Amino acid sequence: MKISLLLLIAYLLGSVPTGLWIGQVFYKKNLREHGSGNTGTTNTFRILGAKAGIATFIIDALKGTIATCLPALFGVGINPFLFGFFAIIGHTFPVFAKFKGGKAVATSAGVLLGYSPLFLLFLIAIFGIVLYLYSMISLASVVAASVAIINVVVFPAYHFILTIYDPLFMLITFAIATLIIIRHRENLKRIRQKKENIVPFGWNLSHQSPTR
Image 1 (cartoon, one colour):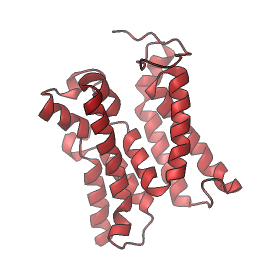
Image 2: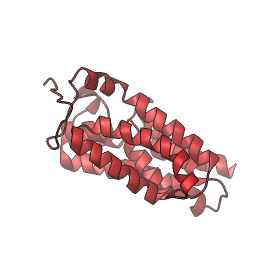
Image 3: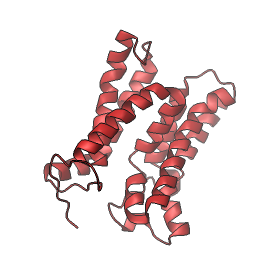
């Protein structure tokens, strides 16, 4: 019963639609009606500005970190990554926003912060390199997710960052990374068409020209 309750709490934490509520309360804007229509960090930055975007990222990440810490806080001997996974599901399919949520990147980062900070730092480095080279948050997110899938298998073999094979961690990482990639399918389509949105820095090596 205690475990079920904590998993529900993790899901409800993840379900808080940060960007949507910030837009409605402080900016009188519904993010679903602007830009990509997504309620996550990237669209919040684009539509509401840096302050709202940073706040959204921090809160969305903290949802994952807090959920991952729940078993330690309440003395439950269950793999904490499972609780983080429920927060990610909540973020992606939030009960408080008609089950239409973000793309899971920020909350996934928060989960890794609570579970394996070094692995998170490695993926942030990959994200940053791809972002600078190609100027696309979407591509950087997809590449980082793909690298995560590969390295939960490779790193334990060399005792690098991830020192042991954790079957549940591997399975959930596969699921989360796949979810992130699927949630970016429209972005990948625009990348192929050279129309994906870009950030105002970096090299834009694929020469995207988004329509305005």
